[in-house]
Length: 531
Image (cartoon, rainbow, N blue to C red; front, side, top):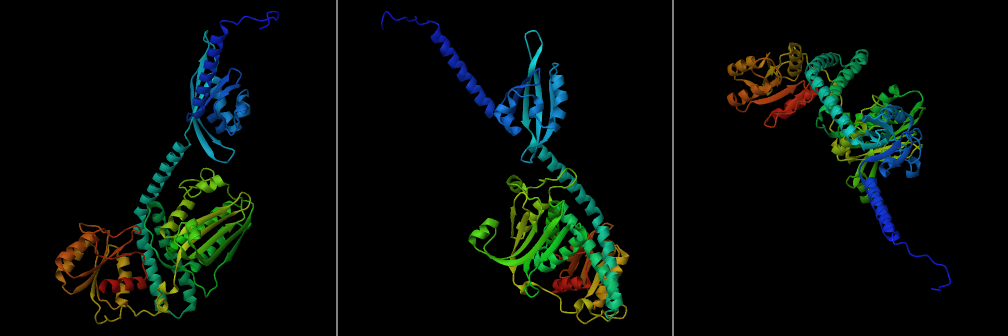
């Protein structure tokens, strides 16, 4: 170094100071890293309601960058509805009172989220409040779980209530259907009478189906799959929709040609409910009106297409429900089939419709595809494994309109066994007795299980026992069948029940026929039982 040039002596204290500052900066960086990665929202605001710090979780929660929160007033950061909830607690916290509260917020992506927050005042050396720490946790999943539990409890209550009245309702419907069918069969060639009887019978059957569907919805009742003409189901659903859609929504259907019947193994009632659910969602997505299109056809899926729909490759019946509504973003599409997920406001939807559609279709061995874009509408495609038309089993032409022999004069047919009919409902016994006599069976009646036991012990010629399950007295239908099996080995037995959700017991070797039933259904089950 040139001795003529000025120079300064090194400060002996600068090195330790720099080391200390470096250590502090490292410590601060570590703390920030920790705060930014804890699963919580952490912030701090001063006496002037201005944020001085907010971690990454906090700024991400409100959908804003870090530079937005720090140095900005609370009123500029929080959405107006959240601010209205929060500000009273802020005022109290800045007076020195620790505060706890919860709030709900709609995020910029449309999701509804919930937070549980605690405000912790910071006190200065003289006891004055300098500001408050904000400690929040996301409780959205907890809230959703609570809603799910409440909804499940509500559905359980619906199931219990419906199950309690289903037996009586089905018995009443059985009497109605039986009498209407008897009147129809007495006058098979009267078109004027048929004009009134046909819709009455259809309405009564619809009532029975409604009870079964409600129990299915509330209690997860197993499906009743069979070969179904999908075109007929869609056409019936379209007729219902015409009366329920507003004038601003135009319904268009494009069904397969009449000669091309689309047959799938499914539950007709659940399929109709699925289509109605999709149509109702489409209607709600078009508040200003639009076009709702329902199309059916058959398609052949290759391996890649089948994998996308989570089905096996091959022939499928395809049902497409398309609307011109507001559409869905990717976040909504990702959750739309989740149970209890809904974008509707409280009280306007349970969030069960699409999840039930998804579950039902997969139970049938099918799949669901969803295509939607914001502002461009939505298309939901149901894929069901196709069957050949020969899978449809129909009664011979004219069977349902045939003239039934007068039950009061119809002779017993050779080979038809004597039937012991047991039911505590006298009117229903009369209806079923008429149907049995019309089929050529001699009939003995009993009003309860105890009376039926006495008749069984006294009349050896009984060849078929038909009994209700739920009856007053010491002996219900199942107990009666067990007694008959011990006392009369080889006796054929048939259970009937008005409980739509009644399932054959695990040890029951006897068939079950649900009320209300038609004479054709009774005849078919009896033939199976006697075979």
